[in-house]
Length: 228
Image (tube, rainbow, N blue to C red):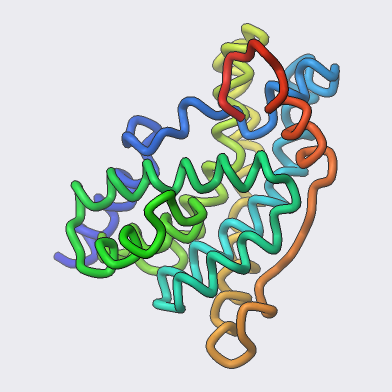
C-alpha cells in the first residue's frame, strides 16, 4: 500500500497544475526566444538538454539531498552559492515560498513548518521540493525526478505560449529527452548520498552562463510574459 500511495503522491507533486507557481516562469525560455536562440522545436530540444545537464542536475541533487534529510539551511546556502544571478536567486526563493505554501496545505509536517519559519521569504525551490517529497512519503529519486522534469517541462510549456509551437511537437521533445532525465537523476541521487560524508561540496555545481545573463536582462524588461 505504501508504494501505491507514494506513486500517487509523486504524480500530485509533479503535476503542472500543482499550485506551486511554476506556470508563471519560463525557465529562461522567454529571454532565449527574444535572443533568437529558440525559434522552433529543434532549438527547444537543444535548450532543454543544456538546461537539464546544468541547472537541472544541480536542482535534482539539492532536492534529493533534502529528501534524504540533510540540513535545509546548509542546502539552501549551497543553492545560493550555485546561483550567480541575483534575479534567479530571487525567483528561486519566490518559487520556494509558493511551493512551501502548497506543500504545507497538502502534506502537513512539522519539518515544513520549521523551515517556513526559518525562511519567511522562501528557501530555494529545489530544497523545498525535496522537503515536500519527504513530507509526502517520497524518496530522493522521486524528488530528483520532479526537479529534472520541471527543469525541461517549464521551458517547453512556455514556448507554446511564446512562439505558438505545436504542443504535439513540444511533447515529443520531452519524450526524446526522457532517457537523459533518467541518467541525470542517477547522477544527482548518487551525489546527494555523498553529502552525509563529504558535505555539500559533494553536490554538483554545473553552471549555465547564458541562463544567468539572460535572467538578469529579462528581469529589467518593462514588459514580459513570464516572471523569469
